[in-house]
Image (cartoon, rainbow, N blue to C red):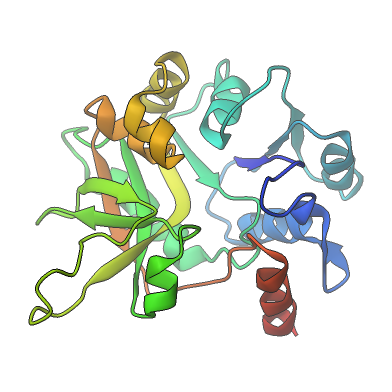
Length: 237
């Protein structure tokens, strides 16, 4: 499932920006299809323009009926009546989505014989302090089993002891859910930490759900700003 909101706050209409001859959202949809990991791939959107872009290209799209604050809610509406076990959320602004990263997230559930894990997601090590400080970059800290402890737009952990090597992980916006987890997310109200940080993954932690993080070496390019789009266009060429 690829949630696709037209009116992004930081970069309106970013999903319809041109990326080497096709809109960003179509590039992302094609990248998800090309992994060959999924039974079905859908774009879930509130926009007639995005819906038409996908369906006119022969793809699958679902129009949201309700208003939603985040991608997880949009996906929950779309899958409510579907007979599915695992749902993967690929962000619409990630046209460089790759098979290896998605396969590693799905493998979490193959290995989870006790059905202990509610969600799996990706993180990538970052070293650039400007990126670590950037509030558009969501950071994650994990325990010794790589379960998420917390997500933040601030640098976590805080580097108070400079003699200890810095280890920072960026949260990449790809999730795999058990269906029950995403339906619970949709049903449960937002709590203070999520409201403060504006990071939907925090809601799962506030309600005691377990998020298994998988480290990936693939950084990709998430298109949050016009500058990101320029980087993506250069990388695509």
